[in-house]
Image (cartoon, rainbow, N blue to C red):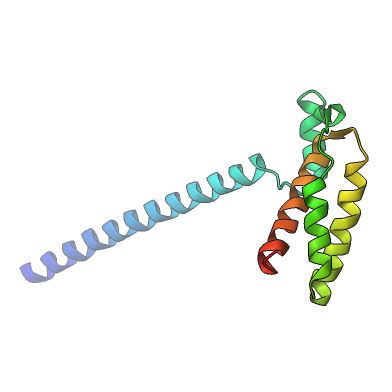
Length: 136
């Protein structure tokens, strides 16, 4: 009889301990999800122009700010010419044509917006990737 009481108490203590551990695990998971949702709401995707434009409107209109563009992309044009002499795959050939258009468009501008600087940066990084791929 004493043995039954001891085993019964041990089972109750184990059940309570397991229940507390399960409750703590659920609270940690909930806190993690809340933190994850907070970070997702705080950091908009760089390609999400709607959210970025709303943030810029709230922060004082960075979208209206124009930055002087002193570059004429001479080195980029030389790289584009060297790449056009190479034998490119179909996808890379299309990308090269797109990059040639973008460099041509931005080389004639005297000032650019904040968004356009990001587009220029993306275009030049794609150009560098192609140069590395085809060893130019």
